[in-house]
Image (cartoon, rainbow, N blue to C red; front, side, top):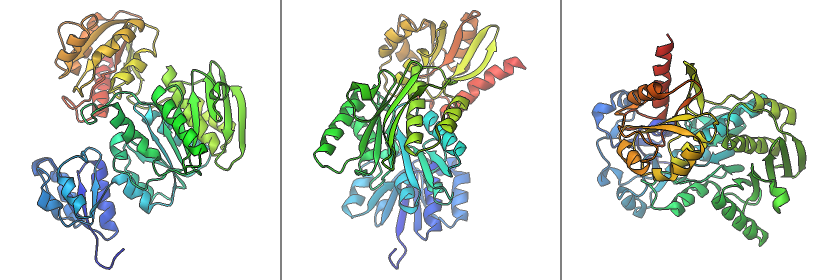
Amino acid sequence: MPERKRRALVVGLGLSGRAAAKFLKARGFLVAVSEQRPAAELEPVLTELERLGITEIETAGHSLTFFENRDLIVVSPGVPLALPVFAGTRNQGCEIIGEVELAARFSSAELVALTGTNGKTTTVSLLGEIFSAAGRNVFVGGNLGRPAVEMENSGCEIAILELSSFQLESVASFKPRVALILNLTPDHQDRYVDAQAYLAAKTRICQAQDRNDILILNYDDAGLRAFGNDLVSRRQTGEKLPRIIFFSVNEVPAEAGCENGAGWIGGRIVIKTETLNGKSLALEFKAPEIKLPGRHNRANYLAALLTALLYELDLGTVLAALSDFAGISHRLEFVGCRNGVEFYNDSKATNIDAVIKAVASFTKPLLLLLGGYDKGADFSLLEAHLQKAKVRHLIAFGQAAAAIIRQLPRFAEKNPAANLAQALARAQSLAVPGDVVILAPGCASFDEFANYEERGDYFRELLQRQGE
């Protein structure tokens, strides 16, 4: 730290932005904040910041003059780095990072970082359960709700972080010991110009890794397989790149010619690689019984299992934790049975691939609630999957309803539901005993709710009221 206090600006006052502002203030920075929302929507937040001594506050937009003469800017994930206001600050030599990068610079914890389009929160939560069961002191946070800056004061030895593409856009020297990319499918088309831009954001998770680190990739994802194979080839020529370990639920990577890998085929798991300490890891054993349905969840479990064994955790403890894990809210969450009809809350399914995985998890006839705030998705990609999954009725709702009906005319009910409550009521009027009603919206929640959690909680609450 130089003798004068460094001047820091936090952009965006969401959960991570507020945490970053407090973190910087506690470490002697002169902290200012800038937020797009008007002050009237931020009264409790602004009162809290002022109580901490943060009084240089800009609301209702981001102005170039407010951004000038800063030493450090910490950007919240929801704020695009492409905003013109950042160009001038870069020219002045100001460093621009995100809250995750900030957290990593101040923490001595070993980092396990995970990203992907779908399954992130499930897998990170499962990893936390496994490491805790094994007696390891871990911090679990990042995109799933607990800001990464909190890991510094947690006393943890290992920090397990879920990271979104938005968070990864603003990392620089962030260097996880183990990084995982679960899958890559189209998402956030309103922020990324094409699939390559999205891939570039996600793969920043490993940009600072070297030969002592490990990158775990999904072998069943064609894009990640190609990306991993390229890194393997470049590593063999001497480049300082991480060791690649593939995992698959379609084949055994080691039997498909991969030097390192883990496969879960039927009831058999085969692992061939080395631990973090270079110890040979060659195992074949019976797969555990797991509580979450679907091939995609089997892949999530396998990624978590592989990570735990790289840390040489006891296999029996790991398998017991896998069997006990019952999932988390809003991810294929069973929320009740009414008149012989089962109801599942998959509010976290905010993109097309997540919807495909959700409907493929069931063999019973389905009534699908699809809708919300449209992020530019191509709903027509669902057609073959809906037919294969025995979707009897598709009830479109919310702001995206018209686009869904237009792109899926064979499945969508012609009359859209204005909101989630109407969609559920219509599904219940159409369902018969033995059916499954699933909320897998394929869209963001912002037309009606603050986030997917609020949407899922409301769906659950509607059903609970009926059972009272």
